[in-house]
Length: 278
Image 1 (cartoon, rainbow, N blue to C red):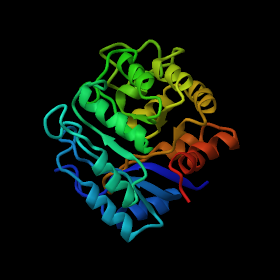
Image 2 (image 1 turned 90 degrees about the horizontal axis):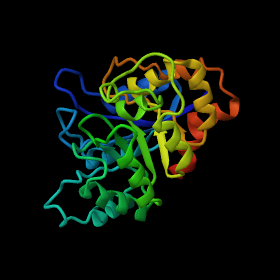
Image 3 (image 1 turned 60 degrees about the vertical axis):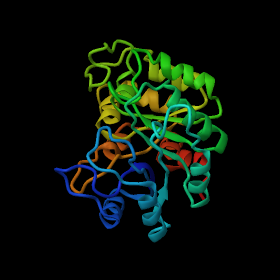
């Protein structure tokens, strides 16, 4: 199986971990059977120690156009609230080859007016957005009322969910104390993430990091059903950002005995379709 990874990072992001060079990423991609990968710039101060700008990501993608797909990023808190129009900058990035937006890591509520400016712009310009959910970043209440409102208000914007809160809510019994963690045990139907993926055509999910892997391994029977049910809405992804980082998602997916159709869609076909790849 050949994969397209919709979530990797390049450069130095953490003070205590080695930076990932493009060559490091390509070596890992070759090891895992990843044909191409999306590079996500980091332009918000939350979660990580350093920035990697859209310009840096574009430069890497120009050097290795057959392996890397650039996304762009803008901190939604730029300038004074209500005085920032991201569309001219986003149009410049699209002209340079960016296929999507992310990773949105701003420490504001998901439905903050500053986020909504970006949601509207990405919908207008056709940029899918990868966003992270936890107790501080794009924060929301249990059950995702804020996210659901955004999905209704911006039906032309394609939201790609990721992070501990997004994946903890596959289960209906998650508590407020657990929703930004890694809850264990059997999944109780029907969690908010499961419901929203089925109800809203503009919500997708990326299967990256420990949070998604935890959601799939805590209850393999549920995971198989979930992946088959949402096979058109999920992307293979790793969130790989430093040499030596453990990546479990390949073994997890291959061990769930998915149908060939579902596995192919999740592994690569959904990325090709949604990102309009050659």
